[in-house]
Length: 218
Image: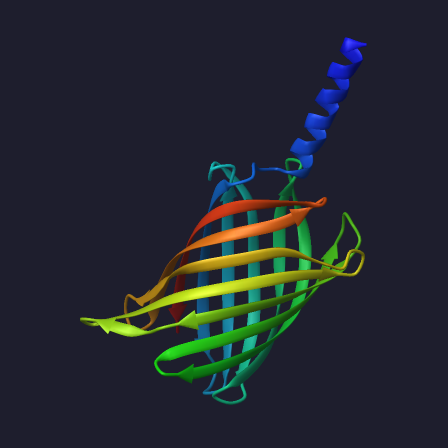
């Protein structure tokens, strides 16, 4: 009987380890690189690559490659769309996701503050499980100012992720704060801290992310 109990406990531990790849409170590092091309005054093309390390930043577990267009309708509104190819480490193997999306972004500048609300709708195609959709809203406050010759933009942002198609639920929140700054006229960088809270199998787990972003405008 004792052996049976130990075997059952072992099975439960293995199952939990598979569902929750990293511990609650895991430290992660995310790095994003963007190349932006201005086609004309209203239209721009952006290429993006992102890489993530988890398990106390010891394991490379995620990468995506993104191409997107943005059209500026006015000072307050722009629309866009694109395609993202995602590779996620699942049970020791990278699984691919195809992710076309559309964006609608509202912006407002008042009293030195910049407000931005990006609404994104994604269609998520998988080869290894059923397809799904996702809505994401990211709300950002920025306060730009200059230190000597450098433009600095401290920011506070929150993004909610809502899955639908199969399971309809609010399943992730990303709260971040950090600062952007200009290195040169065409090169900008960001460094930030992000608290990622994810719901999986009825349980909420947190990850503490140190993030960096480098953007080159051509």
